[in-house]
Length: 106
Image (cartoon, one colour):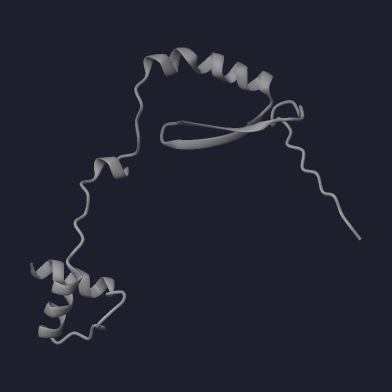
């Protein structure tokens, strides 16, 4: 038996069909609301003066604000680990604990 399932997204404000998700944020909190074209336009119009006067921002923990992390040379980590008496495989993943110990000693 065949089944046909339809999903109809409705506007969260007035129940109008054909809504799409809109994401916005304030004070570090993001919100998502499903809005039909008319209510989306109303929201965009209401926010337009604030958006035009604002600058783009991000969280303090965004990747852009952090310096890129240098990856340790795996060959050097393995050699150091063996000399330090730590168990490390010849190939594959090196445990985060071993890498932390290597970075702390260098």
